[in-house]
Image (cartoon, rainbow, N blue to C red; front, side, top):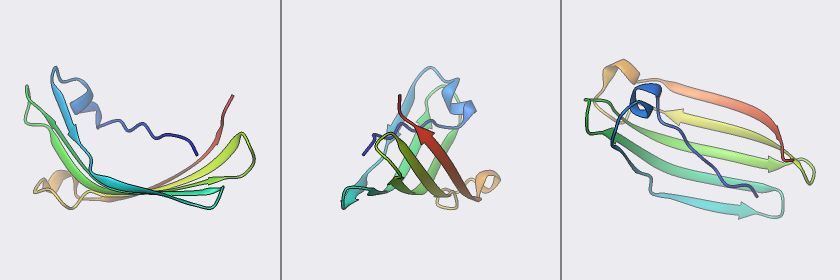
Length: 96
């Protein structure tokens, strides 16, 4: 299974000091299915930008070098009403 790299929202990426705390559980179900369940907390010191959200990712290996990924993000866990939304993202990837 592949490793995951997560990127905070663009306002956090532009900060000098970005902190991330992401406790979670990562489980393989057989050779093809990987499930990652976590709670992500981002904070930036030089601005009031922050984001807390529940993150659930299913990664399925289609072949040796291709995978399908489904990610669900629920942003209603912090007190920031401007970012309270649920996001579902799917992607098809190839490892070279």
